[in-house]
Amino acid sequence: MATGYVDILKAPHAARLLAGTLVGRLPNATGPIAVVLLVRGGGGSYSLAGALAAVYGVSNAVGQPLLGRAVDLYGQPRVQLPAAVVSALGAVLLVIAGTGSPLLAYGAVVVAGLFTPPLEGGLRALWPNVLGGEERVHRAYAMDAVAQEIMFTVGPLLVTLLVALWSPATALLVVNAIGVLGALSVVVSAPSRAWRSAPREAHWLGALRSPGLLALLGAFLFVGIALGSITVAGVAYADDQGRESVYGWLMAALGLGALVGGSVYGARQWAGAPERRLRAIVALLALCYLPLTLTPGVPAMTALAAVAGIFLAPAIACAFIVVDRHAPRGTVTEAFSWLVTTIGVGSALGTAAAGPAVELGGTSASFAVAGAGGVAALLVLLATQRVLAAPGRSADATIRTETDQGGAAEPGFSSGHQA
Image (cartoon, rainbow, N blue to C red; front, side, top):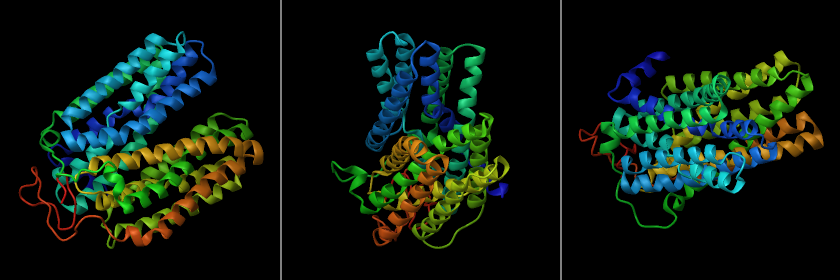
């Protein structure tokens, strides 16, 4: 299993691009918790902390596809690094504003969220040029999903450690400084500097003019809802058990499941259309979410959480393959960023929905939101399977890019300079 991932990381620039992207995304992985800790540490209310964190999330969701489109138009270095610097300056402004000037604080989190660089979409646009073959790129997508789970687990732990050693303000500044260094590491690399998107048809909708992409985004909005609701449901379950540590166990089990699932998925070669495979994976994802509504004792619930996480990373990895097949010419970074944004928006909606569900129907009802989200995602994929069966770009030409002059990409597979 590990051999395939080692082979990818041995490719020129691959390890550096993956590490730089993960480090560059550290502010995004820790943004909400860092904002909450900063506000609470300054004596602000939970309401203000929650509102600022929500504004940060919404701003991030708006900015990702817009910056992704800019990357497709102007290249990675001219967008990613300036955006990272401006986002970090927003964090600095938030530290200066503190809780004394709420209006200034809101403006700061808007800047920090809106200018978060689309490094995740940018990395996935680079993989075909760096790795060549379709099988290796698909494995890299799975490795991305696994690495992301690790980052979103380790990132908050790093913030809490920095807060314990110094202060919330220091933690916020440090993670944003690290994020800028990560973005810098990516954009000065040869693949990032050489990458160019294909010429694109001028259209105000950009990537969203693809029916297949819209269908996929509709499905993954509900996947995001499932993810967001589990966060709140886990807290409610821990409260029922009278132990805050239970929440940590559940989240760790979900992450472990995603780590195992993504590793296994990426270790093998899959035959057949990815759209059909995605329907099967999402069906299994929904099926594994439903038993969480039983809310058994802690050991059994932890096991169910691990099982529930198994198909998350494969679903995300496969979704990015489908995005690449349906993104209109010259919009690949924007299209990848739309998927990231959609999952984020869905997660926010799931968090909002799970709270009332707990109050109205108890913990089981909040976990039912996750199950319903998974089922709804599957229904969208089933209802739109005819649209998804027709990729938006031609699948009969070998792709050659400025960094793939040897034609390493396989026929029918898109790379940075799409056809």
